[in-house]
Length: 162
Image (cartoon, rainbow, N blue to C red):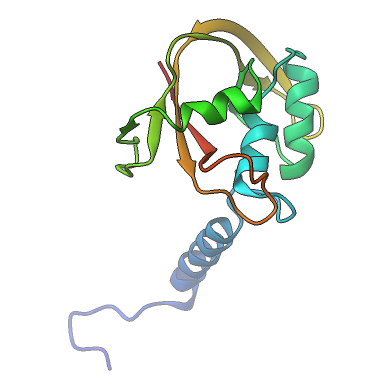
């Protein structure tokens, strides 16, 4: 019932609102950084961030983007072994940017490459490459089924480059 002075919602006014709501639900359901179902969080971390031998952004990002089917905007590759990054998980715990208490800072600087999307649409993504030497912070969790039993904690998220 519409009281005097109130406006009844129009069907045309509801359509854009409903469309926006549905779009929001779809985007929330399919995050752009979603981990592939066949990988553990540590395996996805390794794919996205561990690159002992630098390959260059075009090739390295192609390996990530083929899983997500979009051009990732920014990504950092740590040029050290997964074991070295996993060793960081045993350094003192610090607070992550999301306020969780499972982050750890690397002992010192490591060689890394940052890849920033400059243009293109999947699969033709183009990146600007920036080589740095910096320390980093990773979030670590206990290994999942499918991870190596070699580590008590494994890196699952690159929280920050310092």
